[in-house]
Image 1 (cartoon, helix red, strand yellow):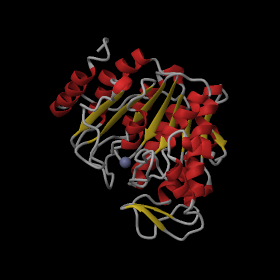
Image 2 (tube, rainbow, N blue to C red):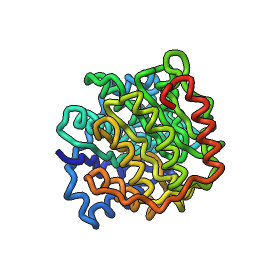
Image 3 (cartoon, rainbow, N blue to C red):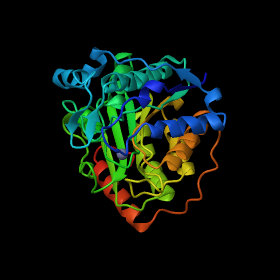
Image 4 (spheres, helix red, strand yellow):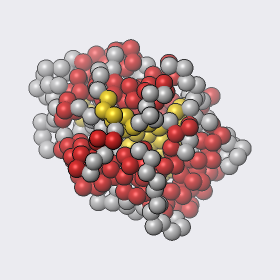
Length: 339
Ligand SMILES: [Zn+2]
């Protein structure tokens, strides 16, 4: 059993008509780093396959799927103030979603221990009926649906991108069988993700938001994982964990204001891997400082390969984080007796 890695040159072919932070060089930086330090050879490369129309329709409306497909072979189409397509973006976005689906299904069937999808465009801002925030299709949400179609009952989605995954939250807010946990800068783009957003209807309690002001680092993130995510997830008992793996919460990011280190990312990966029998798939979302992105991706890959993490030098969380964590726990306590 091994770690599956989705990477394909095709993911370099989604481009903006102008200078854009979400550019192909992000993926090249990760790929080159993993190659340089010998991690690529230790993973199994999984080919990127286009998600089928049916797989996309498990999350998106037919109109949205058609709108993205219709951009094929057109030079540039603007779908949202900061979301665009180039000639091959429709194919690239289908392969990003299909790649995450195949990793998830490989982990569900037991042919892979875990996996990391090095894909773009990212997905977590894409809503059922629209592209948004650099995202065309919601890769992780689509993979969660595919895993359930393959027989799984409960799926955990952990979103540590510095932005809130509004699209993923909206897809599952009424669904008690998908637990969505997000840490993010707040208030910040896209504006959603308050601690009081806990889901609705039958899904109350399976949306969990930890909204941080800027300046949080390893100690604060790990405290949120240990005191909020792990107790709730142990009660929820996921059969698979999918991670919206944004590296834009890393120190030095061009958009985010957080201070996570590569060891912090590794320690979060290790905590998620302690759930669902270790069945975890990371899918790249944001992350805009090339050095930070490459270092964090290497640390996460090492953890997936089973190298143990010493743990970052993290003391107790700061007082601001304590207050945020308390707010989230207060909002969730009615739904999780173990808290
Ligand atoms: Zn982001």
